[in-house]
Length: 264
Ligand SMILES: Nc1ncnc2c1ncn2[C@@H]1O[C@H](COP(=O)(O)OP(=O)(O)O)[C@@H](O)[C@H]1O
Ligand SMILES: [Mg+2]
Image (cartoon, rainbow, N blue to C red; front, side):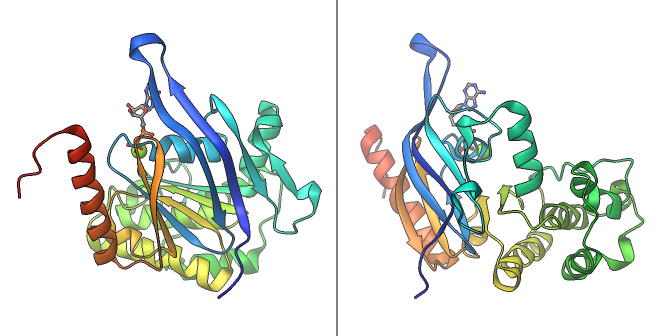
């Protein structure tokens, strides 16, 4: 068994929206660490706080209280950054240079070609692409013959593979993926998941993926289960079947707490 090193961690993360009667606690004192070189899936029913957790981890949203650390690959103290201590411009630079993002809706720039989309984060950072590595990534996602196409000329699956390549090409400390297969059919989804999996196995990438799909979570090394803004369970080396069993158990427990008849 390999030792666990965190790439991202959070302590007592709480996020509340609104005030008074309308107040919602989206995250309730979550303490968690995400392993370096692992694919971690965050699962939970709609409204359980998955996106809020990911957005707070990535500095896209500010927690009401609690802290988030990004641990650099070299482990030096200078490499370890606490997000709430950063000003907006430093946070923007941190996201650009050390994080990659894959969203459900692809979020590619329509006027740029696939290649221009993939290398955009490097351009923005004023970095020259490592062409050898960019080639490796392009080949891994099978986009070699689509590099000069614009997003509108690509299928959904191809667009998401462009987004994955874009997320990986800067060799970020962590890739955050929010429902990356949510807009794809199962075959295109499997290609994207297979690629994220290989980025972990072959490139040592760290990936944190939000999903409500047990099949997607089955690709992970570890699955965390969220309910009502808290981590209520986890599973190591999951299969889709074991994830589904656990989801059903949590759902019937939730129905029990809510006093709703569970039926069978
Ligand atoms: N901007 C917001 N304003 C008010 N409430 C929000 C906002 N974003 C999320 N919430 C609430 O926080 C809870 C968690 O939402 P979210 O993190 O989107 O859940 P999930 O991604 O698991 O579906 C939900 O009750 C949701 O309605
Ligand atoms: Mg969500």
